[in-house]
Structures are given as structure tokens and as C-alpha cells.
Length: 333
Image (cartoon, rainbow, N blue to C red; front, side, top):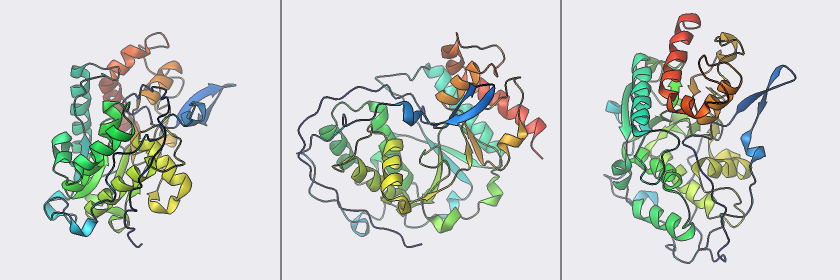
């Protein structure tokens, strides 16, 4: 597969449009919910239920005319190969927010991070939590910040960080990145000495970046593809990396490899038990806000119901740990 070069960023001159604010929950994008209808569980996509319009069109006028070509960037900014000492590493990105909490206390965020580390380490992986400081190493960090701030001034801190994490991944040499609420199932570290698909960027949850892999160049390329996407004249989604990937998938699906290897739906059956058959063949499971909420509403999480979903979100770390423990006992070889 030939690696595509990032397209040149466009100068845009749109009139400022009124933006409808969107509370972007941390990983609400865990895209496929499930709900009970006529006593059956059916897949549905929350994007169908969102009002997506032109509210996030760029206001333009303050963006550099072109981007620095990949080959001209500092050697210490992007490692050109998947370095040997990064084998068996899984990364996540987390920087504390100053403007929102995503429905969880700092203590709960930290417990979820710890649960994430333990789950991946138990599967043989080395773990590392990247932060905004890793993204700042990238030569285009300021460029990305200015592009988003000037063109989308009402974009939340969280949504901006979702773009910057892609830069962080290129600075550490690429590899695997998982959301901090995405835990491994059938994904043992020893099976991934080399990156899948020759290092070409791969999204394992379709256009949801809950689990992805790629070389340093590929993470860098995709970061710029995302920025190109939101600056496109016909972009009509919210300003968030998942929606930018959705735009890319719909307009140029050949840009990255897409798999369906992450389970991101109701994870307990109605009786509160683990159904191994539904998880068969999945590399990981995404315990998003959406998945937690829908599982609680279905009656699958003992001790929680539709009246205390907020408490369940706060206890996401414990619900995730409990499920993985039950899955290991019942389904894991």
C-alpha cells in the first residue's frame, strides 16, 4: 500500500456561523449503541440521532498558507521507523481538563487510567500514558492549535485535545493507541511484534479512534488529514477527531484501513451475564459513556438502573474491571 502524502491545507474565508454547542463526553463516540426493541437487541448508530448541520464551518482567515512537508520536518520530531524499544507498547492519551469533567471526578479518571494500564499489562503489553507535553514536541503543534482556535473558536478543550493526541503518537514513534476506556480482549502483545498492515494506519473500530495503529509517519499523515477534513468547504460535522474520520471515511475511504475488531455495544445480556459468542473474535472492548449508559438501562449492570446512570459513569473503572474479570473466567482460554 502506497503511503499517501498529506494534502495541502486550504485557506478558507467563510462567514462566521452561529455554532450550536455540543457537550462532548469523553469517548461518547463509542459509536455503536444497542437498545432493546420488541424484546430484541438491535444495533444503532448515535450519529443518526445527532443534528449535524453547518454549525462548525470555519470562520477562516488566520491559517498558514501551506503545511511543512513531512520530509522537511525535524528528525527529532517524528521517528521515521517503528523503533525497536516500542515493541509491545500500547499508548493512551490523557490530559486533565480545566473546563469540563466529562461526568467524572479526577479520582475516577485516575482509577480508570489505572484499570486501563492493568488490563493491557495483563495481556502482555507495556503501557504509557501520553499527555499534551508529548504533543508539544511536534513541530506542527502550534500550527494545529492556531488552526483550530482561529477557525473554530468555540471548540471545547476536550475536542481540541482529541486532535492533538495524533501529533503525540507521531512523536513517540507511532504504534498502537487505545482510548483509556478501551480494554483488550483477544489481543496479546506477543502477537504484535510488527505493526499490522505494514504500519499503514489502521482503525480497528471503523472510524472511531478507540483503537488504532500505524507508523510514526502514518500517525502524522492522518493528523493532517483530520485537519484538512475539518477545513474542507463541505465539512458539516462537529469539530472532533471522530467526526473528521467519519468525513474521511465517507469521502475517501481509501485514506486508512478500517476494521470492525472492537466491541462497543451493550456488554452484558439482560440477565447480567457475559455472552461469549457476542465477543468472539473481537480484539478489544470500548467501555464508553454510551456503552455504560445503554448497558445500565438494559438492566445488565447489577446495582445500577436508569435512575443512576451518572453514578455508573463515575464508577466506569469498576464496571470495566468487573466485566473483564468475568469475561476472563468465562470466555478466555
